Length: 191
Image (tube, rainbow, N blue to C red; front, top):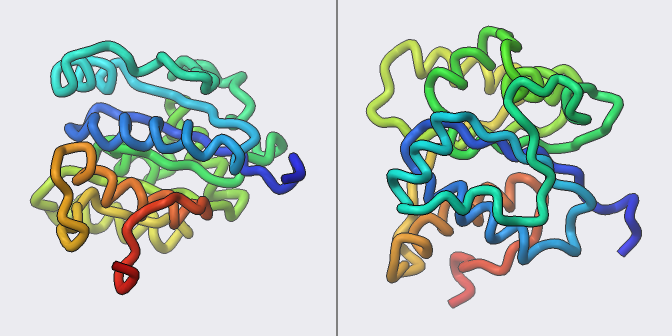
């Protein structure tokens, strides 16, 4: 596969509950190495604390990806000229959603999302909170109208997942599909 056809992806991990989704996403991206040229990861301090609490470890940066501090505005994806095609925020806290919806670029996560939207590229927000209040819904509407995709972390059950990672994978596989990757996953009607 030619390098020019490989994807450049930003993954942001915020402090919403659902660290399992981020873990499964990073694990699956490792399995899809032949489909990407670069993966940049930015993770909030709250995301690190939630990961440690929910998953019982601090293995969030034990991979081959390029990790960037949340205040590093010199990260390549802080500019449209770096040509990162897709950004996935997984999980996406309601605070992050709100700042993205309002165009508040106060850290690398929100700046990168702003860049992706202004360049008319693909932004996928994996929101996990429930239920939604009207502010959340309006923020989702604004992001959608700006070209983003809201993909709630709502697992499916028709693949009969047998553990938490398999259950989280039902969401992550959908996110990877939306991002243009070709993961090996359960496909409806192909049993």
